[in-house]
Length: 367
Image 1 (tube, rainbow, N blue to C red):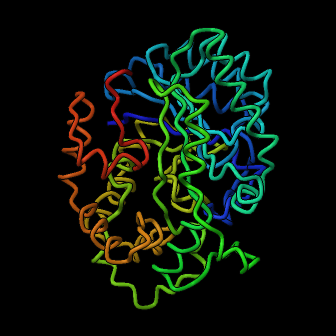
Image 2: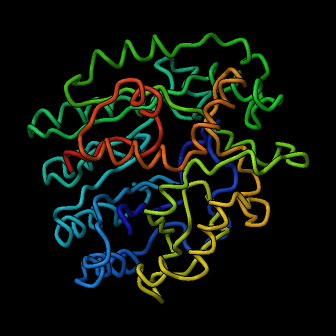
């Protein structure tokens, strides 16, 4: 059943993060989701038929692009809140376009459940090299979010991901023996790791009781076009997003239902919500066969982004540790068991430390 719907309100982004896809949204009719598409989706999700068949807990806005480049973003959130009052709205943002006026409206009207962002360095130069954004323009918005949250007494978690420049460059090189595709200045290879310094500065401004700072797992998404797959042993890999692909829907700006966040160019769409209901698309033989092929690890046969399933894996600086993580994540029953336990509020320190940075595998006990 569908537990979460992840919505690309826009597939544009003002940033150009070193770790992000280089080809996002090229196969798309719209760059931002028209209000009519959002209205159709929300009407479907709030229907009695959908509610009988699915248990929707969360909607994630900001999938595969900057949601605030969509002029209807706030009105879409208002509509979700009105039609789906029990569903948690999570937004993802780099704070470039999450301006003070939008922060004021969203927090005053209590439109969101949580906010996820990346602050990959507190050093302006490293931040620029990692994201091609000006820290002096994005950080004031983040601070404004925290201040406004206090103003309205909102207990809305801010989840801050940190991926340092040093960590990304060295991890990609150690695992693939290539330097990042977006690394234009090889002198940056010598950049010192500033994760601890960044975390220390962020801890000064966040609320430790409700906010999280996460040392982000590293993936090879941005390196797909440059990684040699000619000798790839596909049966040694599992899909790390398999649970999400089974239980979540990903909706592109034009309404295309695509399999997961790694399909940033919407190559493997199953249908469009403007022609069919989400439940109809979810239960299509085409989609069910796709899930079965993922389970059987027929990644080359699937094609699209699955041909580079090695770039979907969570990576460690140490390639041996990367392989160990890959073996663990191949165990579907283990991931399902972990998610079931955390959804009931269970806490296992070792397991949580191992999996805490995996996208959307955190507890839903407050939702």
